[in-house]
Length: 89
Ligand SMILES: [Zn+2]
Image (cartoon, rainbow, N blue to C red; front, side):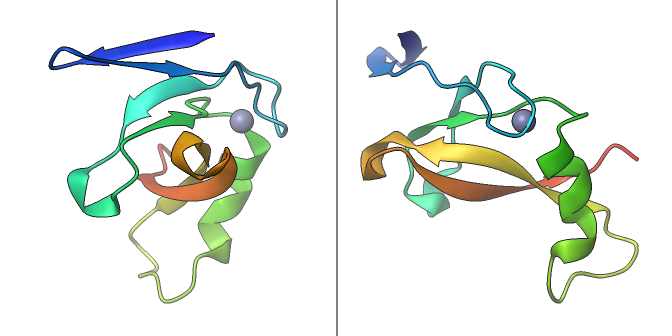
């Protein structure tokens, strides 16, 4: 089990490993506009999902270097969601 605490609110999440790189996923408080709350995210910058996502994003500007991190939404039965992030390369 993973515990996430923010502003006095404790969220308990299941343990999940990223299916793409095998790394333990970490709790992350998503921005309010997403409506997700605390989700589990793969923070591995070498994750194949993350590295391979850069060219798969539609309508992105060529110089934006945006990628998608693999994440799970506990509020929706741990369904996979894509989180847009800036690629480090
Ligand atoms: Zn991963």
